[in-house]
Amino acid sequence: MTEGELASVITRIDDALRHTASIFSRFTPGEVEAVKKAGGDPLTEADEAVDKALYELLPRGDEAWLSEESTDDLARLNASKVWVVDPLDGTKEFVLGIPEWCVSVGYVVDGVPVAGGIFNPQTDEVIVGGKGHGVRYNGTPASMSERTTLEGATVLGSRSESKRGEWDLFDGASFEIKPMGSVAYKLGLVACGKADATWTVVPKNEWDVAAGVALVLAQQGEAYEPDGTPRRFNSRDPLMTGLVAHPRGLGDDVRGAVAQHLAS
Image (tube, rainbow, N blue to C red):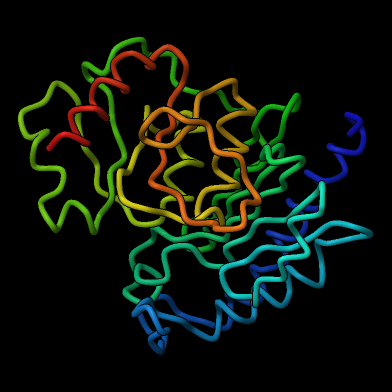
């Protein structure tokens, strides 16, 4: 894929994310009706409307599609280029009116997320970028954290995991744990330097993290599953064991903390 082609993809992502603002304008976070899907997760009219809009705007030619809210067409396994999308990551927060949810759009080429975008309509934040193009936060070039130690760092943890006590082992640690909703939103904030690192040792799906991983990799950061294995995206089974993301300088400290988390 040429640099020009990737730049065009990033522009497509940016335009599509901004288009969804008109859809979300019909809803008031905190005053949204939801039904429960088979697995118990909430589903709103917004999830479905945004999914439909993104499907109409993004795929072209032989580009395949994988989305949380679309029937999975396994023909994608034979495709080189795949859109991996969560039209509304953090639906629980959206329903509750907590501004920690977003639209997540990732573009995967031969198993690697090479471009991505995150849009939080409630906070009006757009984070887009791709390989060789860096990351922009609301149109301005952004940088990842330059920390080389977790001491004094801000780590974005899971709001639901924290409520279950799964982050209690870090009480009194030298770094701050900030609970937050959407994992895609957390990854975007780490990629643009608004936080230092994030991880979860709870299973996630590819559509939850593809965009965020693309953004982290675009910043020369690291993103991998909790056992240290980089993820090859567009797998038959999109379920992952979790996700860890951070700038390279924090690698040793984060890997040590994640190992501690896995052992707890």
